[in-house]
Image 1 (cartoon, rainbow, N blue to C red):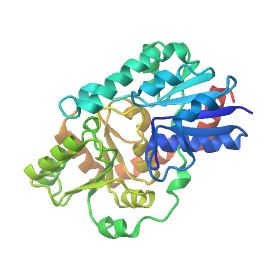
Image 2: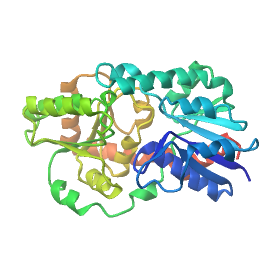
Image 3: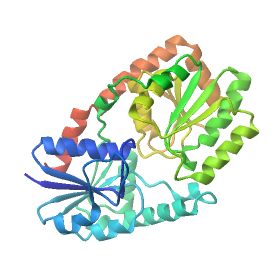
Image 4: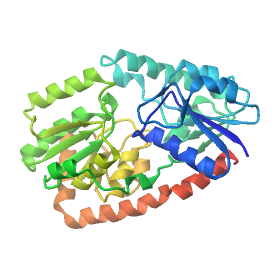
Length: 352
């Protein structure tokens, strides 16, 4: 039996990376290992998360430490000195230029993260990218041993009734365009809003857009989005749903006509797969790991042309045969992310 310790600076229910940590912890314990998760900040609702300082006294030389890396933090430098087998699990760090002029704090941590990615390389026994795109970045950063293992998604969490209030509000709204992801400059919610303006003017004046995701960490960008909505006279047509429960998330996916992503930087893209799970057709800009995640199960946009993006959405919604092809392809694509298959691959790569 191996003792396994997982760390990320912030862990909380709802975000894809935390869900990955919790799902992996359940698997590790099921395999007979003594597994624990640690964080600097455990958000409300995050159960069974220990204070990160305990790592310095809990970790033994025969233990395995998994450092989930998605942001710069000085604690990683200290944890890299632990005398144990250390594995970096790389979820990607958003480049700092996306935050320039919008969020100086986020830009600073992004620069730190990119610098630490290189500095941590000599201390790691292995580095795992949750996408091939991420693995390429690890290779470029100088890691001697790298691998690629997708995020472990516990699809059971979605097997629950949808929230009644969300369903009552949105179930009959057509077309309803959906994007799920924290409000952040690299995810380009601003372009989604601009695209909606074109869509309502040239394709369907009844179209609505729902943006699900926290905007607490990006107040200035969120404020700009609100002003953009006003400037384009889209107040009734754009909804910022904020942080939602799983039942509410299920309801939004069940209500959506299409999932649209114009994000410029994704290290993986769990919401793309969530859309497929609910038979929602995906239209996405092919950036970073988006195309790799989607595979052939969505419409991938090669250019950042908002008119073309809107017309692509319109074609998917107007052509029943195309929509059904995408839904079928999505179901098939999910087989590559079967949790048992991903868990076994994880177990193999970690040597457990």
